[in-house]
Amino acid sequence: TKIFLDIAYKYREQDKIKGDIYTKQLYSIIEDYKITEKIIVESIEKIGSKTTVIDEFKEIPEPLKLEFFISILIALKYKNKFIIRPNYKADHIGKPYSHAPGNIGDIEVFSKTLYWLIEVTLIRNKTQQLNHETTSVIRHLFSNEEFANHFIKYLSFIAPQIHQDTKEFFDYQIVKSKSDKYNVYIKPYSI
Image: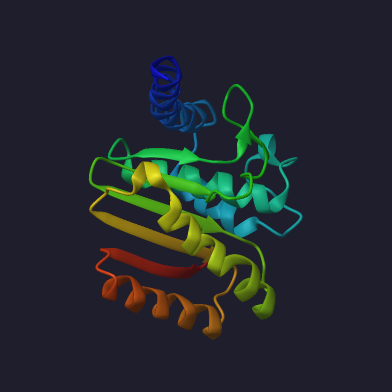
C-alpha cells in the first residue's frame, strides 16, 4: 500500500507543478504574440464575428477561444499573483485545441488562500444556460478536493448575457453557501 501512496503523492505534486507550467505557457504566449490587455479585450469582443484581432488564433473554435482569451486576460490583470490553470487541452506551447473535459471547471485560479473557478460559455438561450451550466459549475466548485481547505472560494460565470433566472440561481447559491458556513463569492458576468 505504501508504494501506491508514494506514486499517488508523486503525481499529485506533479499536478501542482503542472499548474505552474500552464501559467508559464500563458505568459509565454502573451510575450510571443505581444498581447496587451487592449488586444485581448478587442479579441473577446470579436468572438462570434468574422473578423479576428490575432490571426494566429483564428482557427480555434469560438467557445474554446473564449476560454483561452479569458485565461490570458486573467494573466494580464493579475500578473504573478496566482497560478492559472486553464483546463482546456493545449499543445506544447499552450495553444488550445480542445475544451476542458467534463467534471472539471474551465479555468482554475488559485493561491495558498483562495480558489477561483471560472466557467465560460457562449450559450445565449435562457433554458440551456440555466439547465446546462449552473448546477455543474456549483458542483465543480465544491467537489474539488484539492482546494477544499482554501479559506475563500470564488466562482465567476461568464456568458454573452446573463439571464435573470441564472442570476437568481447564483444568488440562491450564495445564500445556501453562507448558511453552510462556506466563505464563497459567486458572480455572473456578461461579456
